[in-house]
Length: 247
Image (cartoon, rainbow, N blue to C red; front, side, top):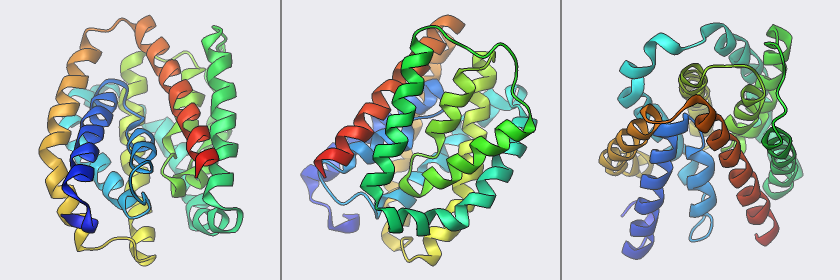
C-alpha cells in the first residue's frame, strides 16, 4: 500500500474518501478539509495533501459537463489573482507559526462566519474585485494546510448567489488553486510515486462519491442547499478546531 499504510487504515481512509467525495459532488467544496481532518486521526496527513489535491482535480473531470454553464469566471479570476500572490509565502508562514496555530485561527474565523450565516444574515449586494482578491489572498495562505476553499465558501455563502453558480464556481476555483499549489508541494518533496499510486487507487471511489453527491444536489432546493453549505462550514470549522487542539 502507498505510504506504508496498513490494510485497516487504508480501508478507513477509503470510506472517508467516499464520504468526502459525496460532499464535494453535492456542495462543490469540503472534500480536502473533511478527508485531511479524518486522516489525521489515524496517520500523518502531510504526505496525503498532494493526493487530496490530485483527487480534487480528477473530480472536476467527473463534474465538468454539468457545471459548464454556471461558472462565474470573473469571480474566479480575482480570487486566483489573490491566491497566486499568497501561495509562494504560505508554506513559509505555516512553518513559522505552526500548522496547529494556523488551523486554530482559520477554523475560529470560519466558525464565527458560519454562525453568523446560520442566523440568516447575508450581504445584500455582490462584492467587487478588490473584495474577491482579498479573499483569494486569505485562501492562498490557508491552502498550505489543505483548507483553502473554506474562506471562499464562507465569503460566497454570504452573498446573493444561485446554488448552481456557487457550486460550479467553487469546483473550478479549487481545481485552479490545486493546480498551482501542487508544483510548490513537488518542489518541497511531498509529491512522490506513492502520491501517483494513491491517486490511481482513489479514482473509482471518487467517481462513485461525486455521482451520488451530484444526484443529491439536483434534488435539493436553493434554500436547502444554502443551509447545507453553512452547516458544512460549521462542521468543518469545528473539526479543524478539534484537530488543532488534540494534536
